[in-house]
Length: 124
Image 1: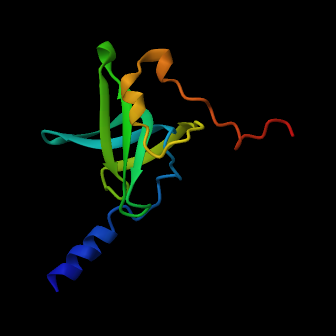
Image 2 (image 1 turned 90 degrees about the vertical axis):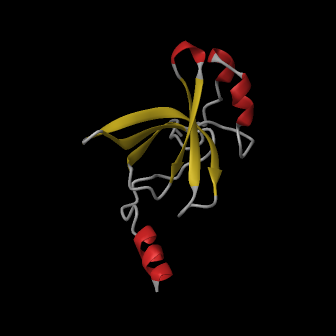
């Protein structure tokens, strides 16, 4: 009985599908609710999706960005998390890997990914 209540509670986490179809290589802007003391605010975390894990519904995705002084910051988000307000896809990249761990070695221009223009209507 208790197990069913937990599953029901978890299945209603993020009832509204605010997360678009994500792929590794996408540059995304994740709006996350953060509680500081008694106050709650929305913080934006923008970076490249490095990996997707465990399917669409209860999976996770890892986003990497370069913070101040060239320090790489990776953050893993639950797809069904109630803390995520929304996710915007800024740009898509053409990659040939499922996990982009090789980006950890690169900084600046060396870490650029080729833009995927297949989804765009380029005047055809």
